[in-house]
Image (tube, rainbow, N blue to C red):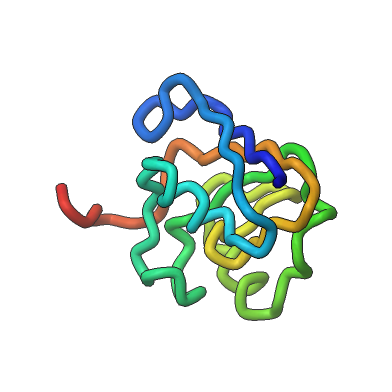
Length: 112
């Protein structure tokens, strides 16, 4: 079972985390299932950028970026070459290291 190492994030995972997740799970689902409440304003339908993450290790093991995701990523805060929308990035059998950016372009957070 692959591991996702989540780098420390001041609000969502102050100590960071190591998650064991089944292959075929999206990064977003893995985070949410393990109590890391990453934003996902479009309910994981590839219609926003609030679940943007940066894959620091294991990027090439993820599924290919589709055109819809690629178009949206252009609007993400802090875009990098290893950026993905976590709702669209599917874990394979390789371990990952993921960074959640400090900011999103979402102007209103749910449940706050």
